[in-house]
Length: 196
Image (cartoon, rainbow, N blue to C red; front, side):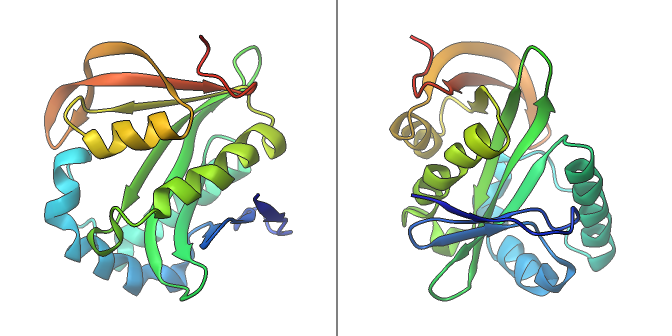
Protein backbone atom coordinates (compact mmCIF):
# COMPACT_ATOMS: atom_id res chain seq x y z
CA UNK A 1 0.00 0.00 0.00
CA UNK A 2 1.25 3.44 -0.89
CA UNK A 3 1.74 6.21 1.62
CA UNK A 4 1.48 9.81 0.45
CA UNK A 5 3.09 12.85 2.00
CA UNK A 6 1.78 16.19 0.85
CA UNK A 7 4.36 18.87 0.31
CA UNK A 8 3.28 22.48 0.63
CA UNK A 9 5.24 23.75 -2.35
CA UNK A 10 3.53 23.16 -5.68
CA UNK A 11 7.01 23.12 -7.21
CA UNK A 12 7.93 19.85 -5.56
CA UNK A 13 4.57 18.07 -5.52
CA UNK A 14 3.85 15.00 -3.43
CA UNK A 15 6.18 12.22 -2.34
CA UNK A 16 4.83 8.68 -2.76
CA UNK A 17 6.14 5.69 -0.85
CA UNK A 18 5.79 2.06 -1.87
CA UNK A 19 7.48 -1.24 -1.11
CA UNK A 20 11.17 -0.38 -1.52
CA UNK A 21 10.55 2.72 -3.64
CA UNK A 22 10.07 6.43 -3.06
CA UNK A 23 8.78 8.73 -5.78
CA UNK A 24 9.19 12.49 -5.72
CA UNK A 25 9.51 15.37 -8.14
CA UNK A 26 13.00 15.94 -9.56
CA UNK A 27 15.13 18.58 -7.83
CA UNK A 28 18.19 20.49 -9.05
CA UNK A 29 20.25 18.57 -6.47
CA UNK A 30 19.43 15.36 -8.44
CA UNK A 31 21.27 16.58 -11.53
CA UNK A 32 24.62 14.78 -11.09
CA UNK A 33 23.07 11.42 -10.21
CA UNK A 34 20.45 11.74 -12.98
CA UNK A 35 23.02 12.69 -15.64
CA UNK A 36 25.32 9.86 -14.60
CA UNK A 37 22.53 7.26 -14.66
CA UNK A 38 21.16 8.46 -18.00
CA UNK A 39 24.65 8.50 -19.57
CA UNK A 40 25.43 5.00 -18.28
CA UNK A 41 22.03 3.80 -19.59
CA UNK A 42 22.07 5.61 -22.94
CA UNK A 43 22.49 2.54 -25.15
CA UNK A 44 19.82 0.71 -23.14
CA UNK A 45 17.29 3.60 -23.31
CA UNK A 46 17.73 5.07 -26.81
CA UNK A 47 15.72 2.37 -28.67
CA UNK A 48 12.64 3.13 -26.52
CA UNK A 49 12.72 6.93 -26.19
CA UNK A 50 12.36 10.06 -28.33
CA UNK A 51 15.69 11.26 -29.73
CA UNK A 52 17.85 12.91 -27.10
CA UNK A 53 18.71 16.56 -27.77
CA UNK A 54 22.43 17.15 -28.21
CA UNK A 55 22.62 19.00 -24.87
CA UNK A 56 20.23 16.65 -23.03
CA UNK A 57 22.60 15.75 -20.19
CA UNK A 58 23.84 19.29 -19.51
CA UNK A 59 22.94 21.16 -16.35
CA UNK A 60 21.33 23.93 -18.42
CA UNK A 61 19.03 21.42 -20.12
CA UNK A 62 18.21 19.88 -16.73
CA UNK A 63 17.27 23.33 -15.38
CA UNK A 64 14.94 23.84 -18.37
CA UNK A 65 13.43 20.42 -17.71
CA UNK A 66 12.79 21.32 -14.06
CA UNK A 67 11.11 24.61 -15.06
CA UNK A 68 8.80 22.72 -17.41
CA UNK A 69 8.04 20.16 -14.70
CA UNK A 70 7.20 22.93 -12.21
CA UNK A 71 4.92 24.66 -14.73
CA UNK A 72 3.19 21.36 -15.58
CA UNK A 73 2.66 20.56 -11.88
CA UNK A 74 1.28 24.03 -11.19
CA UNK A 75 -1.09 23.82 -14.17
CA UNK A 76 -2.21 20.21 -13.43
CA UNK A 77 -0.84 19.05 -16.79
CA UNK A 78 1.72 16.47 -15.67
CA UNK A 79 3.13 14.81 -12.56
CA UNK A 80 6.81 13.88 -13.03
CA UNK A 81 8.61 11.72 -10.49
CA UNK A 82 12.08 10.35 -10.00
CA UNK A 83 12.13 6.84 -8.55
CA UNK A 84 14.49 6.09 -5.68
CA UNK A 85 15.34 2.87 -3.88
CA UNK A 86 13.93 3.80 -0.48
CA UNK A 87 16.59 1.76 1.35
CA UNK A 88 19.67 3.23 -0.36
CA UNK A 89 18.20 6.52 -1.68
CA UNK A 90 19.67 5.63 -5.09
CA UNK A 91 18.00 7.04 -8.19
CA UNK A 92 16.69 4.13 -10.28
CA UNK A 93 14.56 5.81 -12.96
CA UNK A 94 11.61 8.06 -13.62
CA UNK A 95 7.86 7.95 -14.21
CA UNK A 96 5.45 10.62 -15.40
CA UNK A 97 1.72 11.01 -15.61
CA UNK A 98 1.47 13.49 -18.50
CA UNK A 99 -1.11 14.94 -20.84
CA UNK A 100 -3.60 15.21 -17.96
CA UNK A 101 -7.07 15.81 -19.36
CA UNK A 102 -9.81 16.96 -17.02
CA UNK A 103 -13.49 17.53 -17.77
CA UNK A 104 -15.25 14.49 -19.18
CA UNK A 105 -11.99 12.55 -19.68
CA UNK A 106 -10.20 12.64 -16.29
CA UNK A 107 -7.29 10.79 -17.92
CA UNK A 108 -3.52 10.89 -18.20
CA UNK A 109 -0.73 9.17 -20.12
CA UNK A 110 1.89 7.06 -18.37
CA UNK A 111 5.57 7.15 -19.33
CA UNK A 112 8.57 5.63 -17.56
CA UNK A 113 12.25 4.74 -17.78
CA UNK A 114 14.64 2.76 -15.64
CA UNK A 115 18.44 2.93 -15.57
CA UNK A 116 20.24 -0.14 -16.87
CA UNK A 117 21.76 -1.12 -13.47
CA UNK A 118 18.23 -1.27 -12.03
CA UNK A 119 16.36 -2.95 -14.90
CA UNK A 120 14.39 -6.13 -14.24
CA UNK A 121 14.75 -5.77 -10.46
CA UNK A 122 11.12 -4.92 -9.70
CA UNK A 123 11.46 -1.15 -9.26
CA UNK A 124 8.95 -0.27 -11.96
CA UNK A 125 6.44 -2.88 -10.80
CA UNK A 126 6.56 -1.43 -7.28
CA UNK A 127 6.42 2.09 -8.71
CA UNK A 128 3.18 1.38 -10.56
CA UNK A 129 1.71 -0.32 -7.48
CA UNK A 130 1.93 2.98 -5.60
CA UNK A 131 1.50 5.40 -8.52
CA UNK A 132 -1.80 3.93 -9.74
CA UNK A 133 -3.64 4.53 -6.42
CA UNK A 134 -2.16 8.04 -6.32
CA UNK A 135 -3.48 8.72 -9.84
CA UNK A 136 -6.96 7.44 -9.08
CA UNK A 137 -7.40 8.55 -5.46
CA UNK A 138 -5.32 11.73 -5.06
CA UNK A 139 -5.45 13.09 -8.62
CA UNK A 140 -9.00 11.74 -9.10
CA UNK A 141 -8.26 10.40 -12.55
CA UNK A 142 -10.61 7.86 -14.08
CA UNK A 143 -8.25 6.44 -16.70
CA UNK A 144 -4.52 5.93 -17.26
CA UNK A 145 -3.24 5.27 -20.77
CA UNK A 146 0.10 3.86 -21.88
CA UNK A 147 1.73 2.97 -25.18
CA UNK A 148 4.72 0.78 -25.93
CA UNK A 149 6.57 -0.56 -28.92
CA UNK A 150 5.35 -4.02 -29.97
CA UNK A 151 8.88 -5.43 -29.51
CA UNK A 152 9.25 -4.05 -25.95
CA UNK A 153 8.50 -7.28 -24.11
CA UNK A 154 9.52 -5.84 -20.71
CA UNK A 155 7.00 -2.98 -20.98
CA UNK A 156 4.26 -5.30 -22.22
CA UNK A 157 4.81 -7.59 -19.20
CA UNK A 158 4.92 -4.63 -16.80
CA UNK A 159 1.70 -3.08 -18.09
CA UNK A 160 -0.23 -6.34 -18.20
CA UNK A 161 1.01 -7.39 -14.74
CA UNK A 162 -0.10 -3.97 -13.45
CA UNK A 163 -3.66 -4.46 -14.70
CA UNK A 164 -3.56 -2.57 -18.00
CA UNK A 165 -5.52 -4.08 -20.87
CA UNK A 166 -4.34 -3.94 -24.47
CA UNK A 167 -6.84 -1.77 -26.30
CA UNK A 168 -5.40 -1.25 -29.73
CA UNK A 169 -2.60 -0.79 -32.19
CA UNK A 170 -1.68 2.68 -33.44
CA UNK A 171 0.33 3.04 -36.63
CA UNK A 172 3.07 5.71 -36.64
CA UNK A 173 1.97 6.74 -33.15
CA UNK A 174 5.14 8.25 -31.62
CA UNK A 175 8.52 9.36 -32.93
CA UNK A 176 10.94 7.09 -31.07
CA UNK A 177 14.68 7.23 -31.67
CA UNK A 178 14.05 9.51 -34.65
CA UNK A 179 11.53 7.21 -36.39
CA UNK A 180 7.71 7.29 -36.35
CA UNK A 181 6.83 3.90 -34.91
CA UNK A 182 3.75 1.80 -34.33
CA UNK A 183 2.68 1.27 -30.72
CA UNK A 184 0.46 -1.02 -28.69
CA UNK A 185 -2.11 0.98 -26.73
CA UNK A 186 -3.03 0.08 -23.15
CA UNK A 187 -5.56 1.44 -20.69
CA UNK A 188 -6.49 1.07 -17.03
CA UNK A 189 -9.69 2.52 -15.58
CA UNK A 190 -10.43 3.36 -11.97
CA UNK A 191 -12.56 0.32 -11.18
CA UNK A 192 -9.38 -1.74 -11.59
CA UNK A 193 -10.13 -3.18 -14.99
CA UNK A 194 -8.69 -2.52 -18.36
CA UNK A 195 -12.20 -1.76 -19.51
CA UNK A 196 -13.29 -5.22 -20.66
